[in-house]
Image 1: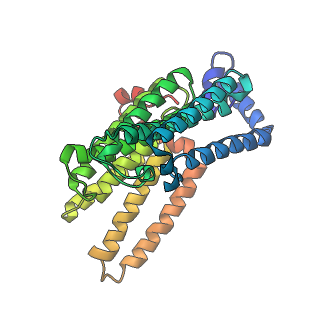
Image 2: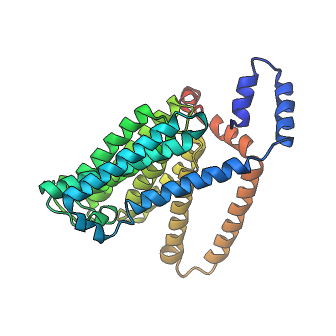
Image 3: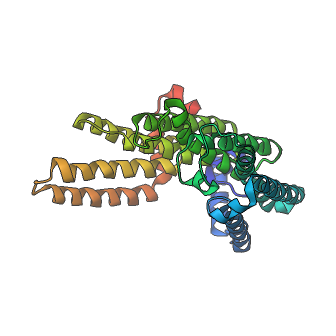
Length: 342
């Protein structure tokens, strides 16, 4: 069982005084036992699952098209049912939840291939023939939309019966793909740099982040990770690729990225501080190459700023808990209840 210090102190509050719980936590930390065998097993489980999922999804080459639509449909159904059967059997065993959940996830990942095979066999496409299945993971096309919707539905159905957090990965990825592929259906255009595409990605990203946040507030198990990840990428990617016509909008972009860094503290999610930091660095690069291109002092100022950031990182690592608590003090008291309990 893995718990952090705050969870331990909350649980111990009913039985021990605060100084006693602090001493007990320190004792447990000093006698921490390694679980390398368990960790190696987890690495093997997830590595094997990623290999299978990769082989049956984005690494699938064009030679599979020889099976035809009916062949691809039947093959994916057989694979999916076998994965589901094995996953269910393993899930029933107390110490086999992780491999069982991974097999169920692999079954969900077979859904887009099954739908593709069915569409290939019937010739029914939302916006014309999109080409080979491999293009599903590389090209934006409106005809992929049924594959994405089907995968999302299958993922939520599986999650209802198997409470395995990694099942949210294919759901979140499909929602991200959906935010890309739904744009041609809305606007009837395929250009990737079309501004509507970026707005759709941005709005879908906000929706995914909000959805993940609602899940995060209601569950102590981390079902929200993949929603935050793909939602953050969709929002930040759409925002970053938009054409900034003047320095004021670019400065607003900087403020949004600083807001993402604060959001990472509020939600306790590293993905937002990573995206925010990249955005801030991007804005600094813009200043270096555009605004202060001929400035003699700017490289020295920027070097000092970089060293300062490194120093702040050291301080943050050393006093992470205290800094997070201090930062949350700036959150209005009426908002404190909205901070995820996890």
